[in-house]
Structure formats: structure tokens, C-alpha cells
Length: 112
Length: 110
Image 1 (cartoon, rainbow over the protein chains, first blue to last red):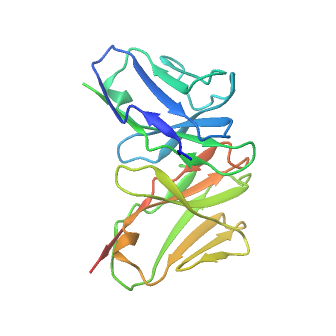
Image 2: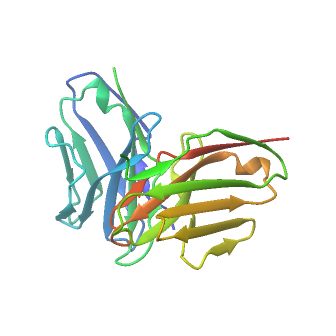
Image 3: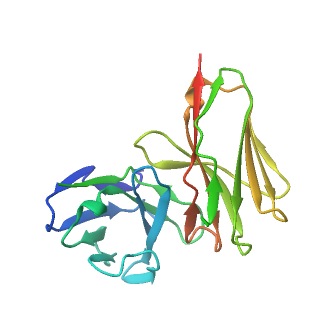
């Protein structure tokens, strides 16, 4: 039973490019969460999704960031026109309808 | 003011020592409380949930004081493998949105 799968593990983008981060939840989990961890800081909630629905996006930056969790396929966190300040570790977690989180191993984004 | 505050450390202790971490939270509506462990450049992993009655899991004891909005973690008989960053985490609505502290770093030396 695979855990939460995130890919890629490492992503390097030049300023102005787009970054697409993927997250496949654990089997049987219908809830997906994205968190960002800036260097030397704690994890910050970004967005909570269920299949085809954004439930809470209160932590998402107003511009350039979007997330989706389609009926089929992984959840995608998209960052358009990346800037150096977007460099961080992005963690995805999933949970069943009721129950605890399982985190993926994260995607480390470096903007050069 | 941060919603969850922790002493960043590092706490340097010898093997076998007892070490305690504290955490305060500002939102009195918080309902769920946890300690997570994060190893360097890895994902956070749930160490234990925290209850007002206190709970123990082997060498680890967690305590919650709702009146003071204070959470603690006690580690007895420290092992080298306990070296990690310990994250204090609170939530207003179960697991739907976790608020993380910046973590307390523990270094256990031989």
C-alpha cells in the first residue's frame, strides 16, 4: 500500500517559468492538503481539496498559485511565473473522510 | 504574534537525558493538538496526539493545559535516534487545517 506519492522530488525552474507539482493520495483517501515550508520556517497551510472541489484555499497566495484535484489523476499545485521567493519544500498530505494525515516526502522547488 | 510558538533550540543533550519542550498557542478555539517529528529534509511524521488528561507512549509523554494554552512534550532516556526537529501542531477543526510551530531542534550526543 503505497503512501502519498509526490513528484518530482526536486524541481529547478528559472524565474518566470511554470512549476507543476503532483500528488497522488494514499489509496482510499479522498482529501488532499498542500503545505509549504520556507527555509528555516514551519509548514504553512495552503489549500484543502476533495475530488473536483476546493474546500479551503485560505492559505494560497492570491496570484500565480492554483490547485486542483480532478476526478481522475493526481492533485496538481501549479505556480505560474515563479520567483526566487517561491523556493521552498512543498508537502502534500492526504486523509480519509475522517482520520489523520499522511504526508508525502515533498517536492523541493528551487528557482534560479 | 505567531499562532503557535516554540523555542527553536537547539537543545543539546547527552544520551540518556530527559528533555522537555514547550509550546504555546494563541487561538483559544483550537480543538486538536499534536506533536510531529521532522528529520532533516524529510516530511513531518505524527509522533503523538495530545490530550488534556495527558498521554504517554513509551519514552514520550505529552500534556495539554487548555487554560494556559500550553502544550508540552517530555522525552525520557534520550536516544541518538531522537535527534530531529519537533513540531507543535494545533487545529481548529480536526485534521482539516493544521497550524505548525517552527519547531524545536533536538541534538542527542553520545
